[in-house]
Image (cartoon, rainbow, N blue to C red):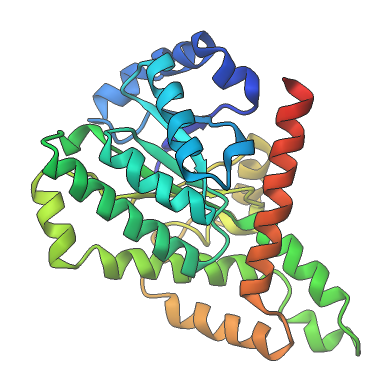
Length: 287
């Protein structure tokens, strides 16, 4: 497993208190330097009340970027439609970004397109691409929980849906990984890479023990608690890369869910709305 790429700080106190974010960045500075910027980054959220306003998201990201002033900072932007516009604009300005709450391969493909467009604009503006990083985070545990709840609510005998439980997140993750594989073989990406661009990262979040060994691949990381990691170590063993070439199995799992009446685009929209609202509530209560 690739070492964790980033530490996440959450809530208004982390972005409203740049000193705390700077301390986190400084703590990981040695790892950041030793890994040539691959690891040791700190992700700080922007105000989630700006989630559906692209210009406000960019302004918030610029403020966090300026206030913290560290090269290993990632500004965390939700992957709403406005967030994708902001993602491109931020990268074009040289601001590294974690785009979060990616719940589908379709949204990830849009986010990856925004990443590459933003890096192309940065290159055209004369910025050093080696200092710009983009990561997308996919909450796999949240996906499984939502789809499992929908499966449990379906009419009919339980055995009809039993095989589909706990399959959604891995299927989406495999599809996401495949999208990145394909996009990073294009001539467009090769030009950016030759200019110093770092391949966009993938971060699997809200992981459970069953996800750990199944979500291992190139330039990926997992946000895993010690308890989850210990349980995963006891329950199974790491088998090397488990994502490469697994997209067909993921496609079949998504088709099986569709056959049961689980509409994954609807799931993604619902989860985005719910989790943006939760971020906003938490921000309000802690401000």
